[in-house]
Image (cartoon, rainbow over all chains, first blue to last red; front, side, top):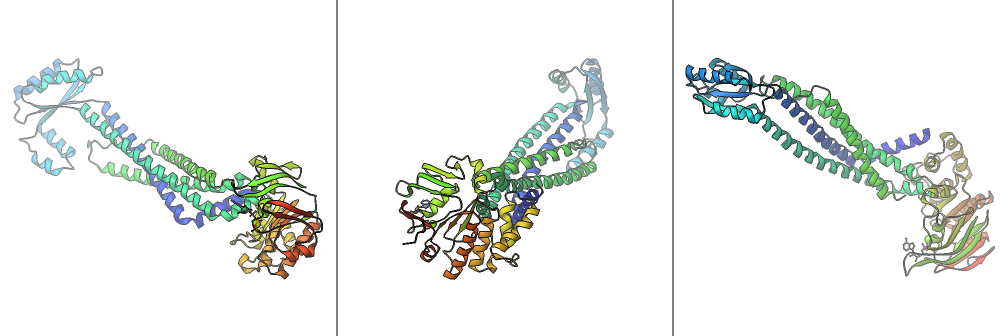
Length: 300
Length: 225
Ligand SMILES: Nc1ncnc2c1ncn2[C@@H]1O[C@H](COP(=O)(O)OP(=O)(O)OP(=O)(O)O)[C@@H](O)[C@H]1O
Ligand SMILES: [Mg+2]
C-alpha cells in the first residue's frame, strides 16, 4: 500500500515537471475561470446586501423647487400628515441639509455638485411609508404630490431598487456565462494536458500493461494529476478572491457615506463559503478533464 | 500450459495473420516459432497474452481459455507471462535497477521484496554491478539482459520472446540464448519467434513453422530448414 502511494505521487509529480508549460496553462485557466465564478457569487451577495439595506425604509422623496414658498411647503406638510395611513413619518431636508447631502452624494462628481448652490438646490421631503403600504398605492399618493404646488419631482427608492436588481441580474448572468465558458476551456486544457502526459509516457504504459499492472493503477496518477490541476487552480482563485475582497472592503470603507455602496461588501463569512465552492468546482473540473482523457486515451 | 484450438486471427478480410492453428505446449517446454516475414509469428505471441483476440478458436493458458477473459482479469494473466522484444522496450530515463524494479512496483510488490529480488535477477542475467547504468550506457546484449531480467523478475510461468536476438551479433545472441536456456531449465515455458537459423539449428528444440498464417511443420528437436 505504502509503495503504491509512493509510486502514485512520484509519477504524478514527475509528470508535472515534465509537462510544466501545459500544466501551468491549465492551472492558470482553471484559476481565472474559478475566480470568475467566485466573483460572480460575491457580487451577487453584495447586491443582495445593498438591496436588504434599502428594504428597511423604502423612501419616497419629494423634491421641491428652489423657489418654493412657505405656503406651498405648509400645504405639502399638511397633506403628508393627512396621509398618515400610508406615510408613517417624514422629515424635511432644508437648503442647508440638501447642500450637505449633495456634498456626500455627489462627492465623486464635483462638476455636478459645483453647479448647485443655495439658490438653485431642490429641498426635499423624505417619507417613510407605513409597513402595509404597497408601492402601487404609494405611487397613487405621490401623484397628488407630484401635481402639487412647488413640487419639482417625486422619486422612489423603489425605482433605484429596480435598477440595482437590473444591474445584479445583468452582471450575474453575463459573469456566470463568461466563467462558464472559461471553465469549459479549463476542462479542455486539463484534458489536453493529461492527454499529452499520457502520450509522453506511452512506453511506460505499454510496459505496465505487459507486466500486468491493473487499469486503475495506470489511470490513477493521471487522474490525480488532473484533479490537482483543478484543486490548485481553485486554491489560487481562493487566494485571489481573498485579496480582491479585502481590498474591495477597504476601498468601500473609504467611499463617502451614503454613497450607496457601503453595503456592497461581504463581511459575513460568505467569502469563505465561496472559496470552498471554488475548490470543489475546481476538483470536479479537474476530475472530469482527466477522467475523460484517461478513459479515452489509455484504452487499458 | 498453452493450447491453441483452431485459432484464426485476421486483421481484415484480406489479411489473415493466423489460420486454423492448433498446438499444445507443455509446462517447461522450449518452442521456436519460425517462418518468413509476415507469416504470423508475432501475431501468435500476441494471442497468448491477450494483446490480441482471435475471432475463432480457443486459446488456453494455464488452464483457462483466455479468449473471453473479462478485461479486468487480463492483468492477472499477464503477471504469469514475461515478454521480451527485439527492441528491448527499456525505459530510457530509468537506470537498470529501476527498469527491473518497475515491473514489480506497478503490480504492487512491496519495497523490501523489490530490494531483494531485483539484485538476485540482475545477478542471474549477469548484470551485477551495472545497476546504476542507464540503458544508453549499455551494449545491445546488456540491454536485452535487462529486458529479460524485467520479464523474469516476477517469476512468470511463460516467457514470450519475439526475435530477442534480432538486433544482436551472433556471439551476443548466443549468450542471450544460453541465458534463456538457463531460465527454461528453471521450469519456465518459453515460446520464441525467430529468424535466426544458426540459433534454431544449434539449440535443437521443438520448432513450429508458419507460412502465411498456417502451421506447416511442428517438429520436436527440429531445425530451421
Ligand atoms: N496491427 C495490424 N494490423 C493489420 N495487419 C497486421 C497487424 N499486425 C500484423 N499484421 C499483418 O499480419 C500478418 C502477420 O504479421 P506478423 O507481425 O504476425 O508477422 P511476423 O511473422 O511476426 O513477421 P516478422 O517476421 O516480419 O516479424 C502480416 O501480413 C502483417 O502485415
Ligand atoms: Mg514479428
